[in-house]
Length: 138
Length: 176
Image (tube, rainbow over all chains, first blue to last red; front, top):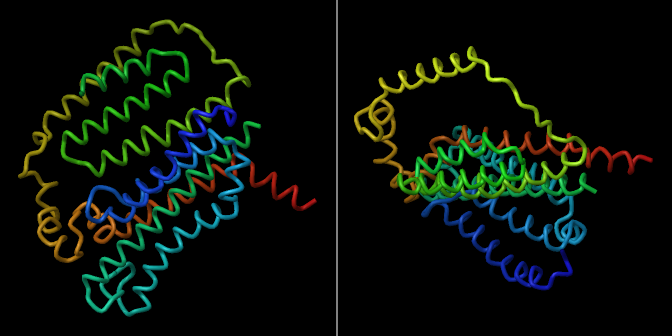
């Protein structure tokens, strides 16, 4: 579908907005509806669009497999790592109050960071699974 | 909107073409998302629209395009069995009878609403500095559950990648 000029131009126009919206849902999820799960899927959908229009080889050039594998594991590790950090700072597992001097700021930081972990894992898993489907089609 | 949902569900059962079924289930998710918005649950609606109508549709379409061509879908008429219809009707009636003893939808004085929900609603914005109570409960009060969900997604993704074999093939190529 790469040869279709309308598709490739529209995809190029849409991609930044989809990614921006994903980041908005990710980091504004505390205040407005949203969070890591939704943002991850929206982020991945931008790359699904990219693969559909430009093909899998071009997409692999931008986000290689190893990066996705790192993202899949890294998100879970970030989430669990925040939990363990709470333990190391002398509190319970996944207790964010101790992450900063003020408990409120700690909660803020903890929620933003674990949502980031959730978003990373979800986006990487959806993109990697879509890559795998496209590849086994060949 | 519930009637639209029911109509879409009947259409999904009725249709034979897999692609049409996938598209209909995407529409089903989209209508559900609208329903959640109407019930003032924008968080759930956003998830349903992104995951149900978006991602799972794309993955199901990819799966359909993989299976097509390897095996034709059997189109065989199954004879109507009176016993089966009887069992389905009895089970359905029993389920509907069960819903009669549930509290009315949205009633504020049910056990489910009185257990921890008032405390969360009262304390969450102050304790977590997050105006969105859903996020506060999900990420802070229920942090363990959410960690479990992320691990589920992690293991599901790893499992699918191994099943589709692209990693195994690559490992073998690298080994030789």
